[in-house]
Length: 308
Image 1: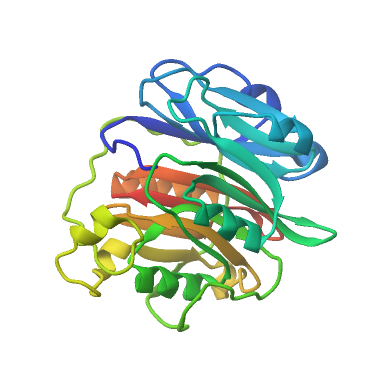
Image 2: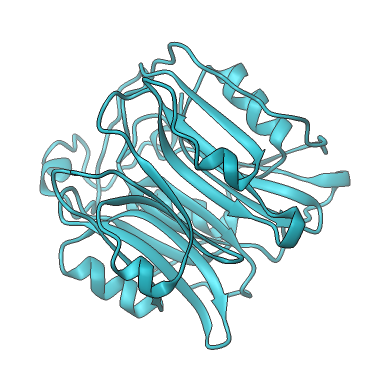
């Protein structure tokens, strides 16, 4: 699920439908397209990696029936008008897309041996549901949902895993991850920064450092490689950072859904503005793994996972 941090990349936001449907220039391929906003304010955020391979296609506003017929997807976003997916034709191991899953159905899917390539929660009259892209071609995925950022950080630390896909939602206070998740830890806040225009970055971003993995990872190879069973390196688990507007936490009612696994030198961020996304990637010379956008009462806010 994680790529090569040596590859170039760029990201965009405030993109319109016609922009995300354009073919990407080589060597870039879209890794994710996130739909946010409604009506005339609907926009897209994109993340592209310079990892050469088969050309990818973007499909916007698919219905649930059209989604079920979609194969070889790698990314999904649920938004107004339907589902947005990025497809890689000819993927060596075919992926499947499912929508309308509740939490139990997602866990049942993982129990069959599939891993999550992407996931997006959305609200329905029957309650929260998930759109999921999965494939049986990699290590098992840990799934967390309904957690605050505080509780999520500790759930990840206990499992010794890092976010691979990180999504924000506001379906209510539902702490549903298994285990004892304490509301403590290092949660550093930043100031209020207004969103600016399109930020692009490319070049050589290297991820360094030794990742010491331990604990229950469900993947036999990772467990065997652990040098200290039950002892998780907090730095490897990754830091969570939140942007707080006006000196107070404006994301108090937000909960997070995460597909997690092993990711060297992971950092993850929530409730960021566009400016903050750009500055963190630039300052830390990091490689973006995942990006998601939501339009909130505070404006557009982003969640981001990166290596660096």
